[in-house]
Length: 155
Ligand SMILES: [Cu+2]
Image (cartoon, rainbow, N blue to C red):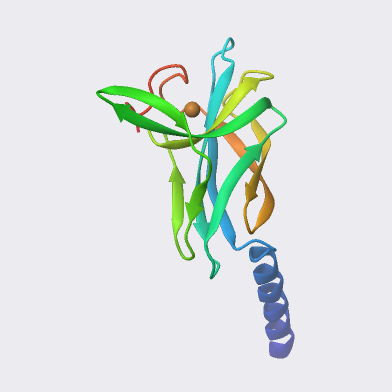
């Protein structure tokens, strides 16, 4: 009996570690988008990327069926005015992480095909230089301020 339980335990551990380490050393955490107003044409996705691998990687782009196109953006303070600028890529060093959050980096969704409603979710494919294409799900959250106000004032 004891042996059986032990065997079952090892099977479970093996299964768990197999699913935890898929082909990608990049962990994608807390992927969310702020809910948009009905008339909104654009939205933003926030997430945290952690590189558990031994080599540096870069996020080079993203795509989703809910938007015509996406851009990697960073919000910068230019003489007191918050502006968004496209960035070519986001480096994630080996053992390091990159945080996309309101007022900082975000994945801009341009040309939304429908408004993002709190509680909804949609797929997002992230493209990495080394890890390749990795699909994740985005949860739509209220997140305080509407998406058309200046980011960085809340949270
Ligand atoms: Cu933006």
